[in-house]
Image (tube, rainbow, N blue to C red; front, side, top):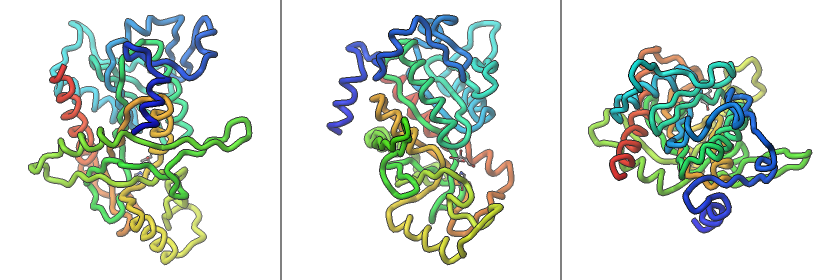
Length: 310
Ligand code: R2B
Ligand code: URA
């Protein structure tokens, strides 16, 4: 879209490297990415990360480590002899990061504040490392609305708790909205990689992003609940009527910050349950673990396709 093209002009050098929308950074003699335990003064970030093309993020360290091993096999990447996959950000004790050739796999924790801090530092990392046109993909879990557990959902549009297609920031005490736009073309490309042989559905739809898992997602099973089951169902029905197919907790900030940085981005989640049938996430562990590989499989197909075009 036109505004994205405009944003890209402001945020790209001619070689595809990222120009930050913050002049303060270039005036600093070094920039410490505190929550990643990396710094532009202490590490050769270009040497370490300059070849990164895909930044894949997901909630838990464990899932991202599994994804790193999986993608290594999928793209046929061999670690340098005698080395093992290592958590690059281990000493941050906050996020985990694994690098598999052009793919960076990072955990983002739960909810907006956690992923927001990470996004600032990842975008600066991409800038310092002079990565060219990196793509960001969130690989997550969600609650489905009218969608069975195990279904893969690609976000077409991220909406906040008030169904606005933007993310609300409070900066210097003032409310600022930034558009929560994702790359529609990338979403369609991902959808096209779903196979009719996959034993599950892969769909595109709108995603609601909330600041809480319980009351914020209309659950009846939190420590508190001041609404009735009828209120809850009315709300979920309203979401469905607006084209919302899933609920999670990071999509609007992820979309808003990638868009603001002119970075192509997508959100691919697997539903852990159908919220129209209940609130508890209680499918067997093995079943849910298998479900969580499904977005990874789709993203791996995409990464392989892009790498094969080079
Ligand atoms: C999905 O799952 C988490 C909550 O259980 C949250 O990070 C999200 O977006
Ligand atoms: N993650 C969420 O945010 N909500 C759910 O219902 C399941 C996973």
